[in-house]
Picture (cartoon, rainbow, N blue to C red):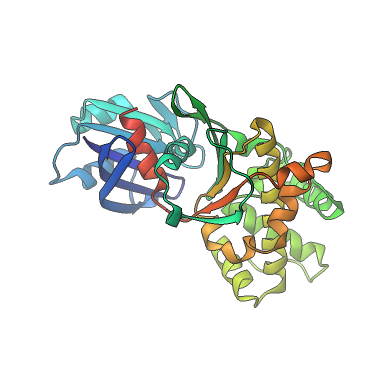
Length: 316
């Protein structure tokens, strides 16, 4: 079956056609668009489909909660309606799913070469899995084995409250509360969160205010090169809190099937994730610290995992 698949984030949209069979997805004609280049998703779909064969079905992974038919994106002023898309494109079956639900589906076709092991753990076949990933926001999804295959459980886990674990993080919470009021983990574990962490670490080091304005990408590059000690501190703190959050979420469903770090940021900061901060935060669970070492942890390198997952969901 030929499927239109898409991954619509807060900043970018990726669209592709996919040949889908049982537990197999082959992508072709993958294109990336900047959302700022279009007024609506419909504009991008028309551009992408022009001159192409009509797909038999479509599934679009969207950055926000959806009932499968309609969504208002969390970090972009777009409203997407499956019935409008069907009418505009002539595709009879159009489905919307949460972008991290698509990642959950995509784990079924994730190859060994598409991931890096952070902690081998003791994998348990058919045990629950967890995927989370930082990008424009923080996506979270769990999958559970039911009736012979993994079923995806969509989640808005990125909006749980941040729970500081030490005095430095207490100060971070106070810093962010003054800006946002309630502080969710997404306020930290995202691209905008990295910029906030940098400003906090600058202030916490009692350097002359204000901190220079730097994008998340600039901060990440400076941390990876080691040229900016404040950027290094910020990214190490990011990894520690990512580990704490991933560990908390893994405890909820005893995710011995594995924890997968997806999204755009994790692969880029892999050298920092491979240092001690992430796993220290992940394992620091008091009476369950030893148990946490049994949980396999991976970084997803396959940037197409969400596209492949959405393609699978189209025929599920």
